[in-house]
Image 1 (cartoon, rainbow, N blue to C red):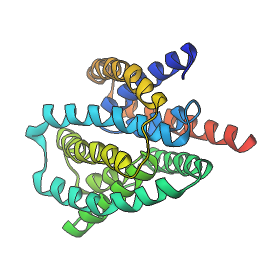
Image 2 (tube, rainbow, N blue to C red):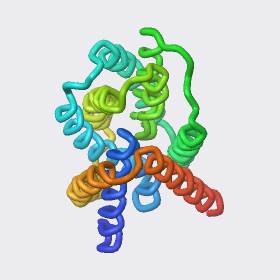
Image 3 (tube, rainbow, N blue to C red):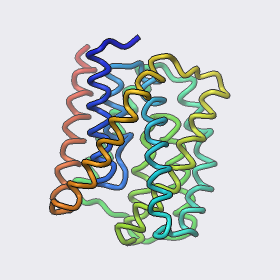
Length: 245
């Protein structure tokens, strides 16, 4: 059972994750999973972030549905269906330490690429499928499935509303599906997972509200860069502390 201090930390992580999600249109997993992995077992951290992220994605997908790029979203969703079993197989069989290293590595690489303004060139239906497949694999293996879709959608040059809506639509299906599969393969959602989810969900909602306010009052490009720098610093610091233990 989590302590009172740990509950407070989970709530703070959830608030910050909500702000990141609204600021960038994604990032709940990138921010929450590595921090939760310091408090919870790696598998529990992924499950908790997946639960809270699914709730946020469903809300975003519905509220921004008018801006969704339907054909692109469905192709990515089809690719995700292929990738989910691959990531799930790794998640179930890998040792906790391996899962933790994968989490931190994905976060650091993705955040650095975003910070450098990395963009893929060109786009095609096949590319949508491949990026969706990578999303599904990373979602079930480490709870960090956003980056492949981000790079693919950036290559298409979508407007910010279309970018967020399309990303949220895919995540709104991948997240809940991941949770169901965890249960079906015997990955028990522990008391710590449900406790962290119950505490984290209100914090996440508060973070979304704060993020919406900041998004409307601050320079968007500067705000995004600050968030990405925080992602890099957070993941790097956690990885170093883990390697020293």
